[in-house]
Amino acid sequence: MLIQVLDDSDDPTSQTLIKDEVHKWQLEGANIVYRHRVIREGYKAGNLKSAMHCSYVKDYEFVSIFDADFQPTPDFLQRTIPYFKDNEDVGLVQTRWSFINKDENLLTRLQNINLAFHFEVEQQVNGIFLNFFGFNGTAGVWRIKALEESGGWLERTTVEDMDIAVRAHLHGWKFVFLNDVECQCELPESYEAYRKQQHRWHSGPMQLFRLCFSDIIHSKISIWKKGNLIFLFFLLRKLILPFYSFTLFCIILPMTMFVPETTLPTWIVCYIPAAMSLVNILPAPNSFPFIVPYLLFENTMSVTKFNAMISGLFQLGNAYEWIVTKKSGRSSEGDLVAFADKKPQHQRGSSDSHLEELHEEINKQEDKPSKKKKKHNRIYTKELALAFLLLTASARSLLSAQGIHFYFLLFQGISFLLVGLDLIGEQIE
Image 1 (tube, helix red, strand yellow):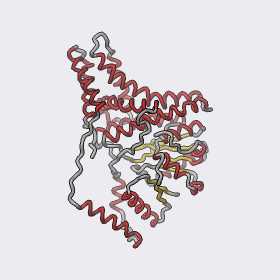
Image 2 (cartoon, one colour):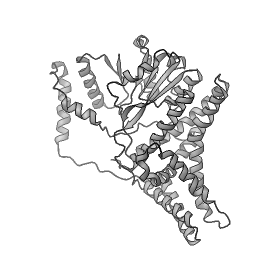
Image 3 (cartoon, helix red, strand yellow):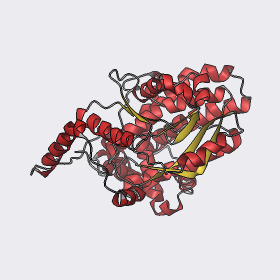
């Protein structure tokens, strides 16, 4: 087994600390290498592509990928690799994510609802009935032959994981999803970080859809699988639902309050969104108290998702923006226990003196009395503009005695106002 630590950072202190950690494990006898790219093109896809082009990769059959905030259990490979045995057509084994900080604040609780549905329903159902789902980019194991036959990592979109999954599916490779094997990670705790993440996750699929639509049509997979790829995989969750939520609840409904001749049936305003929220929250039963905030927040996020979808589909503005999602660096309970029980390591030789000096300097900086960086709220003008529209429409609805519309518009307007003033989640330093 070989471990590659792929570092694309441009901070010398971070690079030195990572090298120190890698060196420590090398002294322990681990087969581990540190790779830092000088020319950092292609973001994560470029980094993975560079690593897979190393000459020693030909000696290995599988590759497991983990983002920096993921914390696999010691038996991760023992619980995943056996699924490749006697199944030469299996190209990917994907495990489920679990979240260390899912109860940190309201934002992380709402994210947990969405991702629980994604893994419990989308990934698991597609894995069972189609042997296909979107690779989640991390906490999965690939057969290297499947990667190579599918064209390897490409830098053409901001969703390199979905890209390689679609191409591997079109080449006939099968995927296995393990819902009972979990890998802990972090959710973004600030709205700014979550917003950037969601922009990439909804812009990238539209870029990919535009690029691979012809390949899907002309592929040799069944018509049923082609329909699933085009309608369910790409269009429904990534285009139709954000478009539906944004246009209906953020534009059409409030505008009808100013035109007395037009009305929307209660089942459109109330029953459909309530049913959709109920279905989405079922895989996370502990989150039922948050069903109303979840519905309102999803409608609020439809602005970001709709904008990302349009920019990705038509290559507009920041369609290819790739910003690393900021995390807090939280450790799992198991990691903390292991750290507490860890025995002191042997002393390093004189060759590591520069690292010791670096650590001493970091400690000095931490001990110095310094002003704490103030956290501030960002202002999001699009959300505030829609909050004004919805709250004005709610007042108009109250005057015209349209009861259920008033309550929905009022709470939806408050939701947009809270997000527009960055009052959900942690603030940015």
